[in-house]
Length: 171
Image 1 (tube, rainbow, N blue to C red):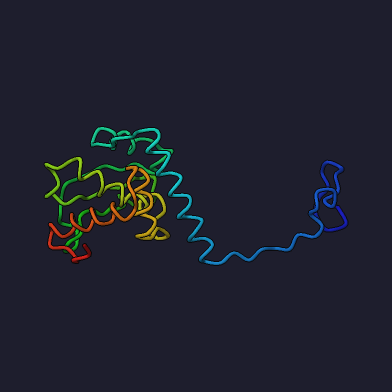
Image 2 (tube, rainbow, N blue to C red):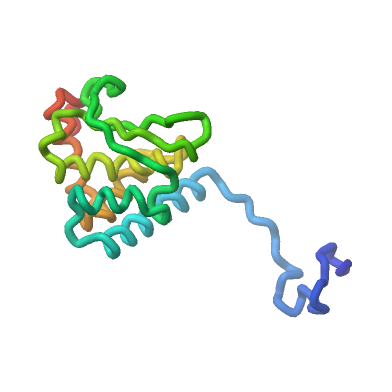
C-alpha cells in the first residue's frame, strides 16, 4: 500500500504525477446536465458526418440500426394512439429491459412526409438512448446537430410540425 492509501502497483509514487494534492471534486446536477448536452451534441455531429449532409428516411433507417448512435433496437410505427394532443412522436419500451427495444410511435399525419418524420424521430432518440435523464434541450441539440441545422431553426420546425397537429402553439 502506498502511504496515501492508493495501491502502488507499478512502483510509481502518486506524487510523481502530482496526485498527492488532488482534492475530490463534487459534481453538481448542472455539471451532469451540461455533460450530457455536450455528449449528445458530439453524437449528433457524428451522425451528420457519417450519414449527412442530407439525412432522409433511408439514412434514418441506417442510423436506427447503428448501435454507435442508437443504443437499443428501435422500430417506427405510424400510430397516434399512445400520443398526447399535439405530440408528434414518442418512444415506448417493449419491455422492462431496454435491450428488448423500443417502438417509436409517430403521428400518422407524417406517414406520407417521411423526410419530415426524420426530424421527429431524431428529436425523440435521446429518450431511447438516455431515458429520463434526457431533456428537451438535449433533444434539440442532438437533432439539430444530426441534421446540420442551427438549434433555433430546428426548434421552430418542430413547433410548426406540432402545431399542424393542434399542438402547444410554441412557434
